[in-house]
Amino acid sequence: MSLASIGVPGLIIILVIVLILFGPKKLPEVGAAVGKTLAEFKKSAKDIMEEDEPIPKETKKTDQL
Image (cartoon, rainbow, N blue to C red):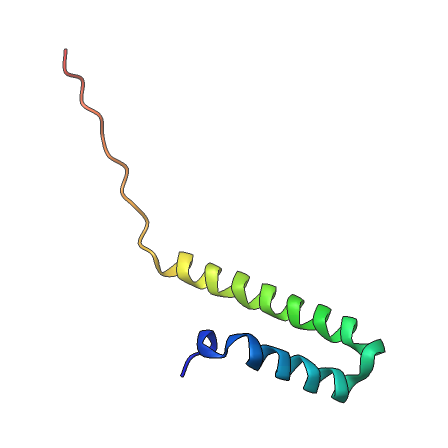
């Protein structure tokens, strides 16, 4: 079961539970914190993926005159 298979009803249930747990005043703060965390994770993952890629060798152009 993946995250993509939750669907709209599942997301609504999760949002209602979060709203009950944190209340309407804390909800924007929680959303911002989750967004910042996901952005930082995405940036770190991208940096790691770029670090693992081999550096392409420069190709030499030959004169064909």
